[in-house]
Length: 164
Image 1 (cartoon, one colour):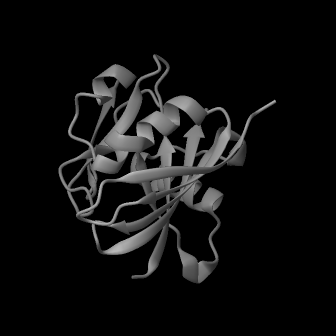
Image 2: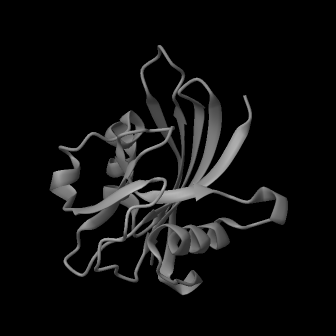
């Protein structure tokens, strides 16, 4: 299996609700997740450049590096048995207050952190991603997840760097 490299961007509105995308495509078809996408590796795109590009493409707002905080690097082994993912997770300090129009990838909605616990979300998000967000979104954490089908999902924290 090959590695795919991607970003997820956690956007909020002024009331602190998260903007999530209900995906129309695999992976995670029909499930709610933060926006994001794959790095354009042929151009040498960095994770920050990808987060900026994906935010503009998916929700139509312009952000810069200063609006982003990289809080997690996650290596997912054997996701859905089809590939490995190296993911960079960002928070965005620039609020988005309007629900963006529907795109090919899916439709958008704002949810409180408590509401997210009741939504259909990917198993990796339910089991680990949102807990990681809750604990480390102001810091930085490196982790790995074994997503091998037929085995219990396992997360292992490899390093934590606390913000000063």
